Length: 503
RNA sequence: GGCGGCGUACCCAAGUGGCUAAGGGAGAGGUCUGCAAAACCUUUAUGCAGCGGUUCGAAUCCGCUCGCCGCGUCCA
Image (cartoon, rainbow, N blue to C red; front, side):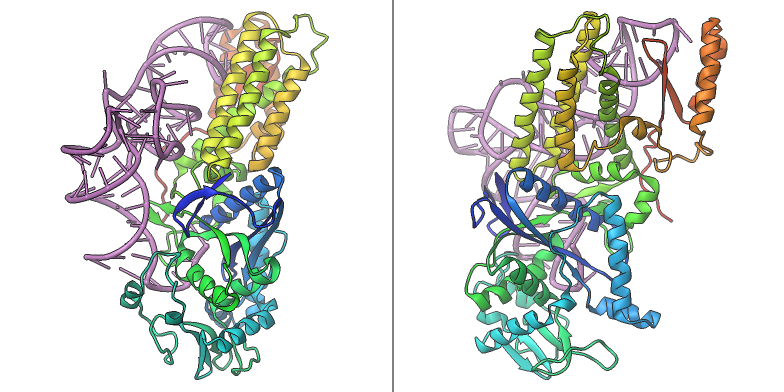
């Protein structure tokens, strides 16, 4: 397996420090507001990555933190007149609500900054003792100049940094580049006792503390959004390595942004969609597919069109899975089984798929290519089904079962294809509904209309039958007449093709 | 201005030195169907922003130009 390492700027073979074991840390969220779809991308990408490592046979320890003390949390708490902890609790709950819906699994350890004050203070003391930090006016600052390799993750030289340094977080800085490890709390702000006076930790120190506590001084993978490369991860490296004298992280992974109209989605620009808003309009599985259909390091553009295409893609997969479901259990039927060429072709397609799928994910976790392989397999299998039908044969149950199992397995990794195909086509709760489709017909109403139509068809009253079909279609229900005379139905949503709009 | 990245068909998107440039969506034509739907087949980039260069060979490497974005400020 190869992974792109932000630190080296290259794709390199992934070799965990301890054979068979992977320790990974991913920066979670600061819980001061609802998550937007950009947070969801990071969560989904690393969720799937963890699943893949596990499936690959590694024993994975996945740590994802909550930043539950921070200026923004304090500001919000003051605005609402509630304690900071109340804000943190509220948005941690909201995070779980959103991520559960997206099928993001829990990390093995989900530490909170406020539970690691002792560890942070230990690190700060150690840095002071080693001369990498200095106390000034109640603050403790990291002496960047002393850490000679500072800037190597973000590829910045000291000159670049000095030129770019601005806002004085602390008036006591020796150098504008220095960053705060501990800051004095103002009256009314949450504060913890420390050797340097009451205060609270700086932003970067928490991740160093939590990562090293749960994963050790050196661990395999540290991930997060690209916007964390500088200064957050750069500072984590500086703090951690200055203290331990050992490499902090072996491989840095950073996911790209979700853009809107080619601009980064962010709170400060106000151009964001929360996960909850998105899930009001789109199926969680379609959102997942959308997020995985681009390589994790590339930017991905938020648009109605893209979500609808993701949904259309899922329709294609579920159509095949539904077909399989209907085909099974007919081994007693009249048609001869296709046990020769056709079954062999199915097995060959499955075998090839498994190789290609894994190869794609092994190549810097290329979920986009892996999904391409899934669709390629769909086409191959559809082709075999069609060939059987043309030859008046049918695939034996065992071949179908093998194909179903392959989709189950690949889908489980991606968090896709896990629903019952019937449920997928008949669900009404979420769907990229257009304004035109207003009231939804109930399944009972639809079944009644189908019976009416079957009657008309029996009389060869095609005009009535077609009228019913058209009427249902106008309400978003498409009928499919099957070979035996049965009629299936599904809900559809036309593509709008419109760019995203927001008031 | 500095640093980093991106620009592949109508849209989305893989591919980063060498088989006919994956896959999805959309469109067109066809097979099947009472009509449909689904599926399948054919079709939509002699070319990968543009111009040069390296090479037997480049979308892939190098240089320049144009366009877009990100970082340097909280940020997934």
